[in-house]
Length: 138
Length: 421
Image (cartoon, rainbow over all chains, first blue to last red; front, side, top):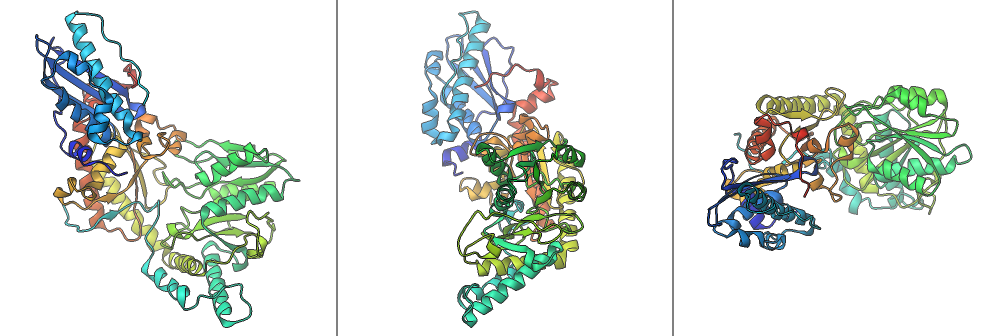
């Protein structure tokens, strides 16, 4: 399979790999996917009291496109408000990384990772009920 | 790290390079001796026919039989189809039951399923143990008075596990049932003798033994017992009526030469591949934790090593090893390494390897499997380079892996409530 240059770039030089303290009340952690499905993404967002994403870290088990989608998403969310981040769609990731149809599920995973991290953050703050993650059609 | 300047090919279970000696043998048969082997009226045809008969002899010698029992096909997929369909159709008045096993090549499994769908056969798919071996006693128990064929491969293409053909042959002969083996993956490195093993039909192909693609053969026993087949391709009645079509003379010459080279160098070839495989095995297992061998520890093809690198998805590892074919990673100027994976992401169906599944390997570990196939042209230097690259890529990807992190924290991944995307 031919990979796009952007996938290769993120795969070989992934941005924002790492772990944030998951007990920090400003950190939301999302873990999506399953080992037997071949991809698991952990996305952590550090969100300021004013609701802006200050930092993002990821770790991903998955194919090159899953790693690239995760890495790209950490760049995308930084500096954005929670509302802006929640409006990110997997199609943006598909477009940016030129993912082929067989790899669209990797972008869905990344979108779900964002939603799960925000839901965890909201739950910690007791702001409102966690946002359910809608199943996406790949 | 050793300095190597070219891409490393270590996927010899997929296909092999044509040996230069095979290529040299083939070349005159494209434009000098180009006759139709079926032309009986002139020297062009006679010369082509002689080349074909010499090749038949070379193949026969490798598997311990007579030249007239060898017929040419387009490859092992056709040989498997002809063996299974041909027997089922010809012996339909005797019975309609076929015995096979779950890790056979798709050329066998899909043919069996097609026959079932059409209502032409009932098929028993025997299980294998966790190393991939079928129990010969299971074969005995599966045979009924309706059984016309038992088909069990010599060695598996993914995990290299070698099946106990001699024991199975003993049973099928006792029971009076025909025995076919897809020997594609063993015939290049392991001794096989159709008489000693009571094999009645045997498929092989040139491109796995340093011959060209598009040419294969089917051994069809002509005596004790005489095996009859209904053809699947009708035409001019070539190959004793079992496989019509003008013979691919250059391909046949190549297959014959490839078989001759295998036969002359069998012991050395096996030793060479085994030594490299053991070096690779030792190099990987001494440096990495949480890696698992798939298949049988000893009863396997000398050149095959199939390993699951837990917490590292197979396709991402392949991507790292392919490295420098991609312009962006090329800056590292590392020769790419060609291997393959049982990961779903490398298959069209997005399903992980059915072979690993049959062994009871979980989908999580199947996704992390890599198949290394060392062959005639690999060197120690290449193996050492592959070890270094794999170890460093696995470590890099594990640093990226949330699963590795969780496992190191002592979390049992089996107990986690995963949220499936």
